[in-house]
Image 1 (spheres, rainbow, N blue to C red):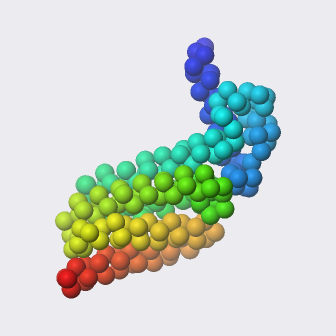
Image 2 (cartoon, rainbow, N blue to C red):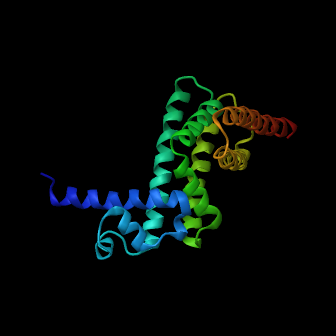
Image 3 (cartoon, rainbow, N blue to C red):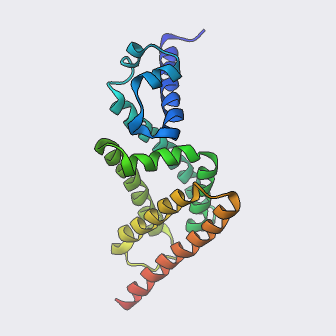
Length: 202
């Protein structure tokens, strides 16, 4: 028999999953409390035991999606430490995330491009975390010839490119995604190569 705390967590997760399911079709900003509680099978008054308001729920969803994506990227980092290419391994993991969770990435990008300011700021914060982690990866790559001062700029360019590619990939068939992945790999290598040329020029 579930304890009180376990039951509370189960209800909280049912609210989150209901909101995720509805957001995939209409976006975070368009959700209503009645829609979410109806989908979750709870009374509207129950919602307020778990979230302050719909904005609080939306910010929780952004964090939920960011955590899921960061966990996958940490798997990529482990593979890199075992000898994989930082660019190719990270991109493969990212495309795997898109294949398995297209609705989550669509929600995240929708919050970034058209959501309320609080959602945009939360999504930008998640994006910044990817940039910061990529800086660490580039710094630890012994094959990187770029200047350390350029790492943040390089990382931001690469994350922007991959996220933009992710938006494009959402509407492509699997064969199209494979071609896009190859193009992104080339573009990412070109960014690193260009930064190395600048470093040697200085």
